[in-house]
Length: 235
Image (cartoon, rainbow, N blue to C red; front, top):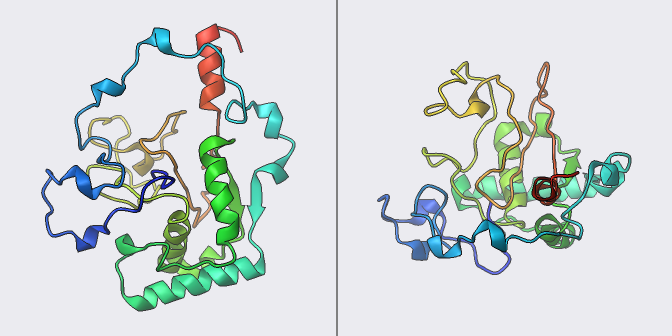
């Protein structure tokens, strides 16, 4: 997702008339199409000498800051929050709107939005991550869970396509594909380990609908701290 902090959400894909690869940039709220759909903006590139030598603040966190304090980065949904999210998902499904057309207006959360609004700032300008627990995904099933997941996301940003197929909601699942064919296969469609990387979006969310028999853990690291370690050759 891209952060909708200063721009309105784009037009839902299913309402657009043209499906051309040359879609005008004006339909995107920040004037930029998703990664791979536009040429590099060379005016934004800076030489390494312009990079900062020091970075401080909540974005440059270390493992020690959070390892023994899960309450600082975990939120367990209360029964009332689950009910509000579930009701919003049911109303959206009943509307018959395609999932790509979901918006904040179509997914009202009058109570929980008071938690999500400051969370958006924390994700962008703070530690940058949170673990939610307690959505009844088995009870809701894949469709309702997907609606709930995307609906919550509308309060944090707007969704963008994540691959050449235009998927805005993908499944991290082993489909038996060849992980070595890196020019054709996305590694999340295999059983291969993913190493640390940064996705082409400002916000990334994962929803666990079925726990893997083995593996499946996610690791996080502060990009800012990593940069300082590399830049200063010390960590």
